[in-house]
Image (cartoon, rainbow, N blue to C red; front, side):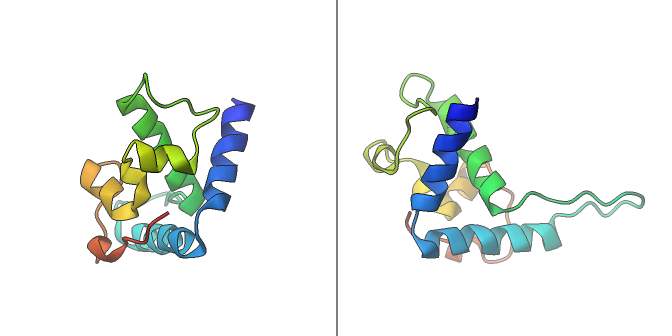
Length: 109
């Protein structure tokens, strides 16, 4: 597990600054728009990197023979045409909830 987390963290940090900013913008919008509206304890929604990691896990589950989370790389995203190349594709896959202007969150990794 430690090896996977280390690799996914490095993968997120290797992405372009514009790509990481899109994930941060999404996390902020998600936090404002998809919070539970019931009374009581308000749950904090996950930050950008956590959302990215959740989507990588979803992609790995959808492609069990092709994706090894211990060694997956940016080049694998490209060669396997992963939805993770752009955040808006993750929303289209149903891995992330829709937020305002999600279609515009399309910076490439």
